[in-house]
Structure formats: C-alpha cells, structure tokens
Image 1: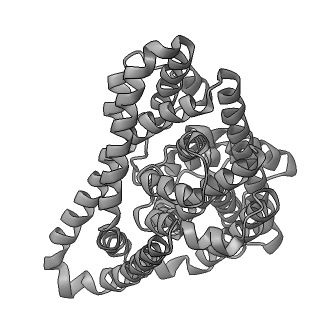
Image 2: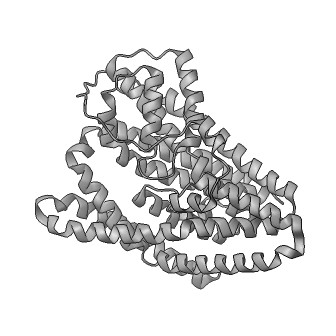
Image 3: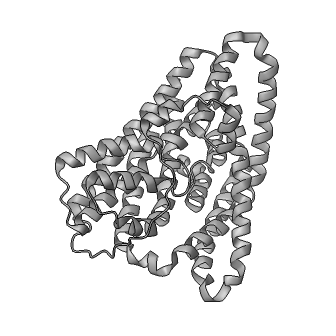
Length: 403
C-alpha cells in the first residue's frame, strides 16, 4: 500500500470514529428534541446497509472462485478451508470457556433482582447443526443468493471453483468474467467506503435511540464486564495470534483493520462488514486465495465474542435467578455454545435464538429473555466488532502459515 493510500485509510478511520461518537451523542439527544430527524436517520442507515449488502454475495462468490483458481490445486483449497475452520472452532471453544468461568469467579449477578418479562419475543430463526449440514448444498443457487444464505453461497462457490480447476482451459472464459465482476465489486465497495462515516453515524444513532439511556444504565455493570472481556480477548488472544503466528506488528494490524472493526460496531453485522474486511485484508497483504475463503467462512462460523456473551449472560442470569449450574452442566453449555455458533447468523440479533436454546439447556426461566433482548444490541455491537477482528486475525495467521 502506497503512502498516499495509507494516509487516506487513516483519515477514513478517523472519520468513521468521529461518526461513531457523534452518532452515539445524537442518539442520546433525539428523544424529545430531534425525533423529527429520526425518519431521515433511518433512511440513511437503510440506504448504507443496503449498499453494503448489495455487494456481499457477488463479492464473496467471485472472490472465492478467483481465489480457488489462484490456489491452483483442489488439495490446497481443502487445506486452506480446513485450517480456517479449525482456527475458528478452537478460538470459539476457548471463548466459551472464558465466558463461563470468568463471571463465575467474579460472582456476576449474585444479589441482583431481575424484573422478568413474559412477553413473546421474536427471534432470528436458528437452524440446528444437523439442519445446517443437510442444507449445505443449495438445491437452487439463485435462492441461496436471494435469501442471503452465506453457507450455501460459500459451498456453491467452492463447487464451481473446484469444477473450474478440474476442466482447465475450458473454464477460462467463465473465470475471466468472474475476475471482471470481482473487480467491479471491489470498485463499488471502495466508493461505498467513502460514505461509511455517515452510515455508521446513522446506524449507531438509531441503535442508541431504540435502547434509550435507562436501558443503557440498567445493566451497566455487566455490560462493562462483558466489554472488558471483549477487549482483553482481542488484545491477548488475537494480538498474540497476529504477533506470534502471523509475525506481524500488532500496531500495524489494529490500525489497518480499524475501518472494518468500527463498521462492525456500528452496524452489528459481520456479514455486512465483509466487503470492508476484504479490503482491510488486502491492505495487510493477505493473498486473495486466503481472505476470499477465510473471511466469509468466519462471518458464518466465527462467533468467539457471541460465545463469550452468551456464556457470560448464562452465568449472570443463573446467579441472579438462584439457579445452580453445576460443573457438569457448564461442560454441556460449553459444548452446546461452540456448536450453536455454527448456526448463528452473522446479522443483527442473530445470537438471540442461540441464547434462548442455551438458556433452556441451563434450566433458566423463560422470563429472562425479555431482559436479555433489552441489552442484546448493546452487547452485540462489541461482539460483532470482536468477531470481525478474529476473522482478520485468522487471515494474518494463515498468511504466514501458508508460506
């Protein structure tokens, strides 16, 4: 990356951060003062999110097909995908352990009185591991694109990429078209990136307004603990992976990936952040054949911070409700948490159904779901940011191990 591009990237990062801070302030002062501006804020937020989502699936499909072509070997393609999947499973397992035992050691939730909610809460549809495996191969690829089924798009792209490798020269016309579409997608994303500060401002304003100051203050202690855990996890685990496995400067890594991290924080969607994550991976010097596979796979499977959040909240609610969660049950929750992450969508609210399943496994009262919903978005912002950083840390590590 040239010095001019580095300066532009740094300015964009600063602008996104300013948009994030101003959006939080604006969201706090909207009630009673600027509610007339809310429709405009929601409109801008919707346009920005749609502009990002417009490019997610064409970019993922084309970059993965091009990446498999660049790998040049079916066996090597399987090796890269297997390495990325192993990375995400191991870090998610560790995150689940941390999220369970840290709040247990601190006694989080003890002495807290929770007002239960009996209202029915709509949750994002959750698919079990068996359902996920059964539906990996799309019966209709166009439906996979139109419904936004990332796993099916990934599998379809891998099948097409491997088929292209198998037939050799006969696939060249299709590959040239795919490369052209990939370049078009990258160009569009580069333009959308320029509007990211405005998009993040609008998205975070709507989030803060929807939750309100009372909700933000109600569970401030547990949220602070969750965020401290996120930060420590990112710095120690991901920072250690980047430094000792990726052989990369931690400072360089975090400065380069900050646009993706801030966008993930503002939008609460790792899937919508994929185009920006891809650009950050390119700036880190990660080969396309690695980033094109690891990033979309991570957006679907890597739920480290969601595992921390769900484990944390299970212990918090268990202590607050006086439910004794034994060590044996903790082990079951850890395993279930790790497996559930594979079926958790990388979209806002995707963790709600997974938490409902975990709460049922742990024997918690259904009434806690209303309380959990009230803080989910606040916690999900940091969780999404953490997950996106994990995806990019995986890319940095695989860049070095692939040598």
